[in-house]
Length: 208
Image: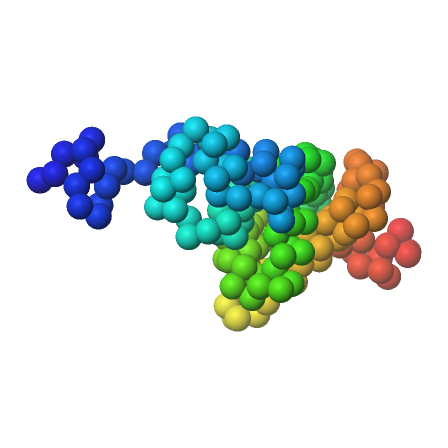
């Protein structure tokens, strides 16, 4: 059997998590400084201290690399159990907003979204690497709320999936618009007001 520490044929060395993290961090830093149009794989390899061939063994090109650099940031989002659905939603909204305040997150996210309007393959990668992965938070939150008796269970999987998509779109879309498009603060008061509207709807909010 080939020694894992020595390259052998096409298999090569096992991927290093530390090297991947350094490359993705370098990608975000370069994107903030250079912007999408000027960013190259050479810039990233120089900043990360790895050969350009190392990048191409992991990512086919800049599009895939930048999406994964953004996805790594969003994978840090968590949904701690705060005891009720409303508190859970408020917490994740504030986490998301805090992430979007980071220059590397805002720059990278806006860059890939803008570029994806011209690139269907990039749009598909954003959906699979970022959007679909972050729906885990909605699934987890709904499962907890159902276990507490706060939400009804949906036996129809297709209906449950559509509901998950809708909740994700409402929360993510609203926070992104507030933070990045309107450039307005997402603070505790706003998060509480938004969550109340989400939980109770327009009629409930108006009557509160």
